[in-house]
Structure formats: C-alpha cells, structure tokens
Image 1 (cartoon, rainbow, N blue to C red):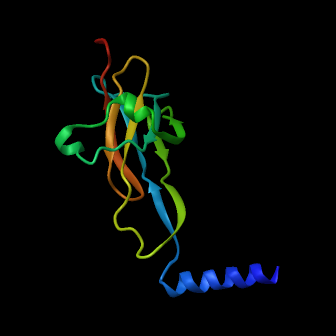
Image 2: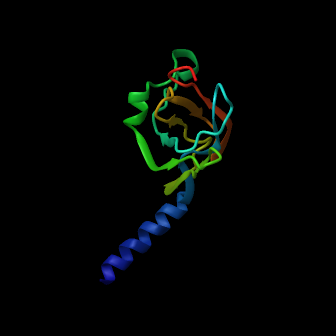
Length: 143
C-alpha cells in the first residue's frame, strides 16, 4: 500500500511538473433554437433534434455529411421540440489531462427531423451552446 501511494504521488508530481493539469473541456457542442414550418412559419412541435459528432473538415468545400452518416454518430440526449418549437441540447463536457489545453472547440452537426418534413442538417462550429436561431423545415408535400 505504501508503494502504491509513493508511485501515485510521484506520478502526480511528474504530471504537474510537466505542466499537465486536469482541464474541463467541451467534447461536443450543444445548440438551442426554434423549429418552424417553411411555408406557414408555424412552430413545429414534436421534431426530433440531436447532435452528431459527424463533421467533415471540408464541409464548406465538399458539402455536409449525409443524414445517414450523421445519424450514425449521434450522442445523447435526443430532444423533442416543445409546443412552441423550441429546443435545447447542452454541450457535452469531459475532463482531460493535457498541456497546453486544446484550442478552439469541437465541431459537430445538428440534425432536425419530423415526419412529413425533409430533415435538416446544420453545422455546429462554436464552442459551447450555439444559437441556431429559427430553423425552417420544408414539408415533403405542399400544404
């Protein structure tokens, strides 16, 4: 037991002496906003909203990930829009031991789906919770 304490103390001194310290970082961005019908501008209640870790570094140049790619890499929680179309998904955070702390944030994709509408995928590029504003879903058939 004494040797284990000695080893752990030595490891802690070594890490701290090297400049490593625990840091709480955002590992996946979050988002909040409002979902509405593109034609009527009415709130869309009951839409499924989720954050995906799918992100193509080349997104601006080569396009966004497909819905299938994005849905394959989702993380909890999956939320449902309220009666007035609002949703909130918190950023995901984790503790790391790193020096220097990572710069910038992690990126991801926001997926919004509702039966009768085309799914929407939006890039999440801000660290923390990103305000995506009003997201307009396009109906699959004219109303």
